[in-house]
Image 1: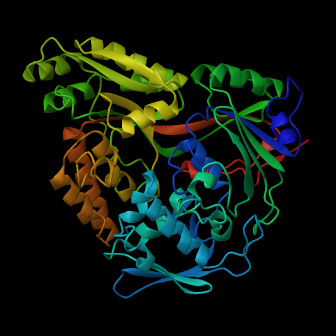
Image 2 (image 1 turned 60 degrees about the vertical axis):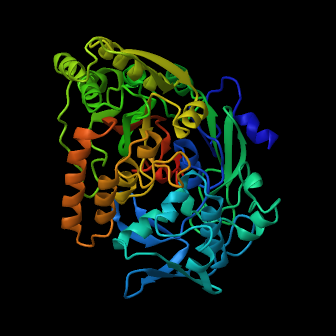
Image 3 (image 1 turned 135 degrees about the vertical axis):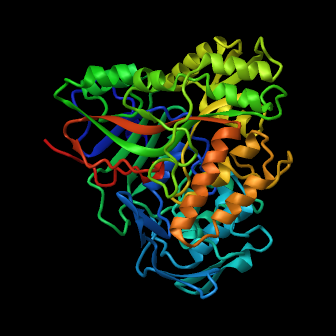
Length: 521
């Protein structure tokens, strides 16, 4: 381990080792390595390269769903029970064979631990009391998953591709169980998967080291190891990339991208993501809860300038909760900077002189720059916005406790069905402080029983065209009334050394893959 870590802090060198992929990325959002808990961008990518789900999909055509650990599946006549058959001959990195006991345990465990992503599974009627009966092993290599309703057929399959659906090694995890925690304390910082890489080490805000899994059932990775170095500054990443100290830079800003454009040793690659940038306005704030204030703030963002300058090449203006590429995505962008319109709305809210409010911002260069630009245009209408910077863990913890006024952030879909974002932006079944389900609407204390019913109806519609129309109508209403200022859809941009090939930019971060990356001479 010491030698592997050493590679992450080597001083200036002409070239990275030929069997090692080194990436520079801001990785301060990692709080756990347990698939039952991971809900952040960086850790999702790490797990996507080190664990396997029951099913997956083609990142170039997400409608093409195929088995990964599952060999096949069937759906009962009533549409409520899936039967999965596990591929024979698979094993975990530990050498333990993969049987139906492992995915059954993994799903039961995630529901019982009830961490942030558990709602992806509990939305099917699963809970700690019934999950042992609803998710059950029926043979050495067969299992059943029963749901409370006959949902749209692809919904469950897409949900199982999320990190919370990744399969863990039951025998290994339970060997580290303490006080009935299902191995949780151990797995937060350790590894029990079957993917192309194993997770060898994670040092918070410093480095993550992965090594090739010699027991992987697929094609072995050409890279013996992959290392993430925590380097927040885009300018530093650019210098390291130019020197050859890293292979891929992940947080390049507009200036760095432009500066690298003419460097023959570097190539710029990009891909559209499902992630969207937004502001959440906490409805516990007496000013932000006013409909006119919510609408005014949508007129106080200079969307075009931010997209064309601060985030040049890294976002496109997008103002609906479903990203482009999803079934039923709405591509209308009705809002633009209009200070006079915003002032009229503030006057109608009995706030003609504006008000003072805080906004929590993750201290990445891009989020900070966006927040500062928004701060300026809000001030033009009298809204005095104080920015409160923090690292990923600090801002997320505060936001998840709904202790913010405004939060500016980035949301990535958990799976490729449109319900993934409808469920969090437009659904809030219980607005109580002790609610079991805590989607983004809950985080912003937005009580929406009627919209919740609309989202619930859409997820049961089996006809794709009718279902798409339902989501379009839902987004149109959401744009007008919600406490979300949805601004941009992300375009992920990477600076890559010219000899590095095969990095896949997928629609979700757990789809980003370096499993088949090669280095040419």
